[in-house]
Length: 540
Ligand SMILES: Nc1ncnc2c1ncn2[C@@H]1O[C@H](COP(=O)(O)OP(=O)(O)OP(=O)(O)O)[C@@H](O)[C@H]1O
Image (cartoon, rainbow, N blue to C red; front, side):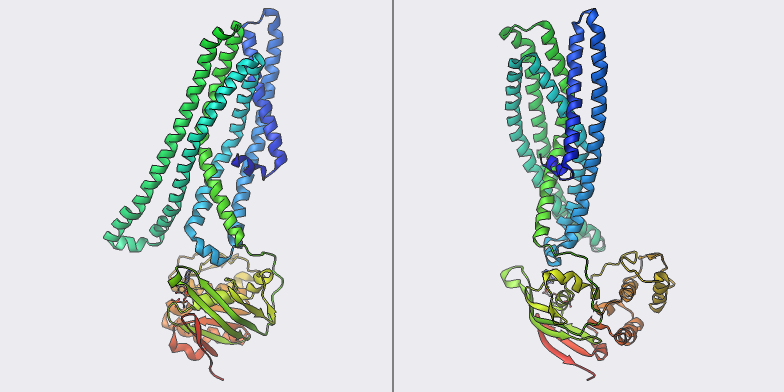
């Protein structure tokens, strides 16, 4: 049902057409059974008409089945495409703080496993529809032969369906537990890929990780999956048992209760025998459908969670390159963990002006990066306000405000192409910066694509500087940029690049532990336990 409403969201009209044609196909197939049954006892004179009807029904069944399947195949793939895009957009629109709290493992698990589970189920949906329609058609034929038999058989099927539903729900519960294990598994997989060096270097750590983490979660995942599949198999066997009971009942008991002509009896048996195939196919799909339903729950839960902390996204208006002041007024931010370990930054009051180099310094964990995320508009202030050129930044213009910054964070990500940079002669400009950054012998840029990003950490960081230059924004932020540069480049960064940017009228915020270069700053803001210890001007 969930899968159907998921498809209905794509296009109600097309789903209606597909289901209608699908049912037409199924009913035609059932009609073929009725004709075969009729042909068995038909007189020779009737055979021509029966053969004509057979050809007509076969053609209808085939054509409607093809139409239904083509529509549903397209719809199903469209729905999965839109699901992927919607999730991507929702994640990008959600507040950074919220995403950090969710963690990357559950988000990755949903983007990969859940979307794939839905895609698999949705691909089988067209065939499922035809099978269901065939079953409905066969029941209609049974009803046409005798409504008493129809009611008896229906009663039997409804009773077994209710019983099966209980078993299926139990199976679905186990699948949901397995899906929860999968979130933890994804966290372990991240530990394998990101912590491969640490795991390889330390045998006891690796063994402990394998036995205590990966094995325990994998075993739990296996147990829940086995339980679920066994329950699905039990439901399927129970369903088949009822089905065979129905055939037996019609064949052996019915003639004793009602007087049934032999031809009608053979019609029942033929119909039931024909029903085995679609029923079998549906039963085989039950675990896939159960999985998809659990995955859709996860996708919806993630979607709701993302939506609850979604930012207003609109095409940002042109930026203010000639800004004159940026103020933080009593701005605070809290990382909520446990009561004792909550970290509170602020209240912070400070004003930035164009063309100044501001160093933000302080010990580890004093709140420098948090302040940077607040200043750049990545975190929404818990209280207080950011006032840009006298205009308080609200929800509506946060996206616009962010476009004034070019930032290189300590945990930066390097794209392998110059995304979203629309400069004239981009390649030539990029090449000239590559030369200044002493990277022209390592990297080429052709049509905005970097020839490689497989470089040393320091070199990769230099490439982020190239992107920052090309972005040409009014305010720059470098979070411990120079920490992994060699002494020559460190000198170049503080003594040449920063003054050059300042000369262009840029404001530069530098988070730094390099006290050796503090004299390059116009102003130093020192943080201590989330508070400004001092905000001092130099070179005045
Ligand atoms: N995503 C997060 N969730 C919860 N707490 C966090 C998060 N990021 C940082 N913190 C906590 O907030 C405090 C400030 O962290 P922040 O990264 O701003 O410090 P920092 O001054 O930049 O440190 P460093 O010099 O080590 O980079 C720390 O106590 C840290 O544990």
